[in-house]
Amino acid sequence: MTKQRKSIRPPRPDRLPPEPKPARVAQVHDGVLELPASIVVGDLATLLKVNPADIINPLIRSGVFATMNQGIDRETASLIATELGFTVKEPEPDEDEATPEATPEAAPAAAKTEFFSEAPGATLISRAPIVTVMGHVDHGKTSLLDALRKTSVADGERGGITQHLGASQVQRGDRSILFLDTPGHEAFTAMRARGARVTDIAIVVVAADDGVMPQTKEAISHARAANVPIIVAMNKMDKPDANPERVKSDLAEANVLVEAYGGDIPMVAVSAKTGVGLDDLLDMVLLVADLGDYKADPSRPAIGTVIEAQRDKGRGPIATVIVQTGTLRIGDAVVAGAISGKVRALETTDGARVKLSGPSTAVVISGLPEVPSSGDIFRVAADEREARDLAETARNEATAARDGGGRATMEELYRRIQSGAGKEVRVILKSDVAGSLGAIEHQLEKLQSDEVRINVLMSAAGEITENDILLASASDAIVLGFTTTLTPGARRMADTEKVDVRLYEIIYELADDMKAAIEGMLDPEKSEVVEGRAEVKQLFPGKGFVIAGCVVREGRVTRGSKVRLMRGGTAVATDVVESLRRFRDDVREVKEGQECGIGLGPTITIQEGDILEIVGEQSTRRTL
Image (cartoon, rainbow, N blue to C red; front, side, top):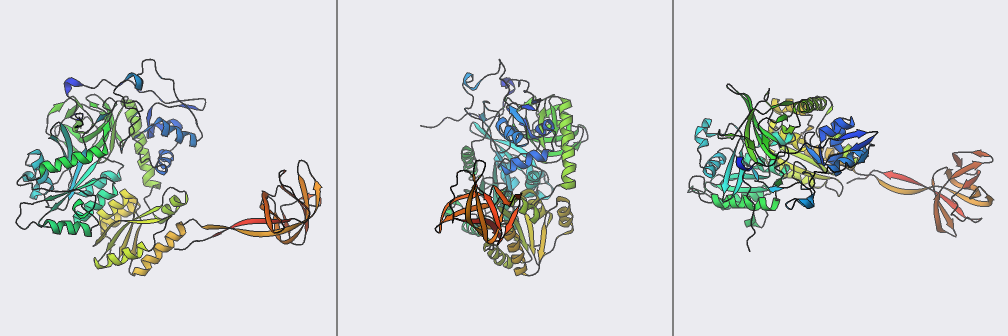
């Protein structure tokens, strides 16, 4: 029996989703915090009067990767607020608020996308997958999209190379797919570096007559760093010198095992010129999308990502945005990064005027006073005043990040691992020649441990470029260079983004440096050590417990230390030294050969002749 799928076409103007009800406002009364079903991180920080980083950091430690302009659900916000010392109270539901039971189509539980948390009880619909196409230059990325959408964009590009990032909707039966065509993986990662997580699936295009090239490997590394599913599209199958087996072998050498080689990466053979395999590629995208089960709530205010922006001579600043959840309407007050404004007009990417744009759609908005940056998160605010406040908060956070923020340095990684927030060191590895890379990776593999793992996101020959720094910045990685140099642009970007770049001339210096750094990150081994022994000579009654009159035979006795009661060479009980006296004076420590009175807990039965072992703890630095 075939399962019926819901249509995920954009909402038609004659089937508008209901106007969203005014959002319940979060409030603080007498130190008691009332939270709505969902709240934006920046709003929560303003409400609690804390820096947004004080909220974002605990979220990341909990595995929730949200920027200050993204929403979190009530339960998550409650945990963070409680950790910051606030008492949280759930608000009473409104009388006219529909409950999940009263709405047959309501989801039984809150659904989360990779980007935003939907409100509990929200009516969720399946949305179109958002697909980014990447690969080596001239392998046919844009030509492939032209064939899918039956346009001729590539003919109009300068030199046949894509200069801009665009979006297009492609229909397959009653379902749609939103494709992003990028000038390269740099734009893909630049958006990630700004906190955007817009892509659901990545298609890596490889020319069948050319094989895996350096930019192909980089594209794969960027897609893996973003943790999105990969589909390989083997293009130019119409060429007489097409060699599919060579492509599969090259991919295997790049640690990409396609399904034909027993791996889990799907590969589809296509030809943008003849149209062979295009339907199979679309079907594969929809199959991967079914596994991802992408959903959104069209009735909420829109949230999405700016993918392209520019200043138009006639319309002023315009921005192409992807609406990821909710519905964007003309007249909405919006904030994009540190810029706020009001939507004056909406157009599809092919120039058609529309009144609204639903989940997984691309739309061009005008009305912003300035041009936002690619990768900025945009959202609809309650009114223009709130949009201005959110933009101001974003500006302040950006300033604070430039002044005191930083990416992954060894010191920052050490702090994270010690706090339990991370157990992985991400590395970008560059060398002057490819032959050195294998030896370096072999040395790094020897440094793996159960606690700290080295994850080489990308290894390639050549200079350290701005693209390497960009990937490190977006992925919180460090850059290791062996007998290579940084380009001037990469050096400037590393300083700006505060990316840790380390250069080496000797392979063993690189390995020793990484080994020393990782050993410093390992939790030290802790072991018990007997710091002293005292023999019980006489017992005295105390207030609620017995005091043992002792002589310290070895070492010392310290108040508050752990004590083990030994009788006949066997440990009978353990406790803590509650009180320690010499004659009538309370003391902190008694040394070997001195007499003292040791008070233990009331549950411990002591006899004359018992030995009290004072147990301490010592830490030993671990080595690999």
